[in-house]
Image (cartoon, rainbow, N blue to C red; front, side, top):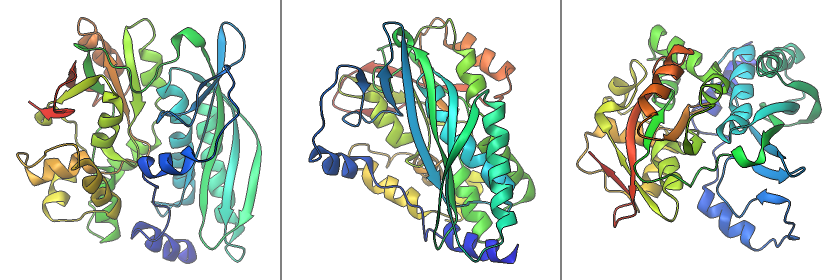
Length: 344
C-alpha cells in the first residue's frame, strides 16, 4: 500500500485534481455552440448541478458526472467518498439515481488490488443509493482517479434548480464544514483521529436521506456544497434576482477545523475560492477561521436548501432525525440588493 500513500501525498498537497473555476469554464463553453433542443431543460449554459433532459410530459432524466484523485489513504474509503460525491448531484436536484458507470484512471504499475478496493467502495454507495452499476470506462494514467457518471430521474415539475431561491426562505445546510482543512491537517500529519473520523463519516454519507426528507416541503432552490466551498455555491444560489444573508455563528463545523484554520493549515483550493469570492463578497469583518470555513473546499459536502420560512425548522429537524445530525438553518434569502452575500 506504500505506492498509494506516496501518490496520495502528492494529491493531498494539491498536485492533481484541482477543479477549474466555473466562470472560466463558462467562457470556454460559450464558444462551443450547441444544437438547441427544447427537451434539454438544464444544460451547460447554467451553473447547475446536473443536466436535465425531459423524457416525457411528466418525467425528466438527470445526468451528472464527477471524479477526482484520492484524499484518504484507504482505497475502499476513497471509493465510498467518490461514489457518494458523484451521486449527490442527482439528489441536489430532487431526483433519484437509477444507473451509474465507473470512471477510472489508474497507474499501470500499481497493485490492481488497490483498484479492486476502490471499485468495491464505490459499488457499496451505488447499492446504498438504490441505483444499479452498469459498467464503466478505465484508462491508464500516472495518478489514480475515480468517480461515476450517474443517470437519475425526477418528476419534471419537481426538479429543483440551484439559483431560484425565494425571498424570505430560510437556508438549511445539512452537513458540517471543514473537510478541506482536516485534509490539510492530514497532509501535515497533524489531524487528530476524531477529527479525521468525523470528516470521513461526513464524506461517506449519502445526501439521499436529506433529499428524501424534503418531500412534501416547499423548496425553492437546492445545491450541494463541493470543491468551490459554501461561499461560491451561495453566490451561485443567489442567482440574478436574490441576495443571501448568512449567519456565521450558526455554521456547523467539524471538530478540529477551526483550530486547523487558526494554525494556517490551508488548501490551495480554499485560497482559489477566496480569490474568486472576494470579488463579490466582503468578509473582512469575520474572524479569519470563519472566513476559511466559508472558502473551504468540501468533498461530498451537504445540501444547501432554501425552504419556506414556516417549514424550515421542521424540515431541519426531520433531516437531523434522519441521520444528518448537524443540519441547521444558516441563513435566509433576501430581495436582491447591492450586496449579493452579507452576514448577520
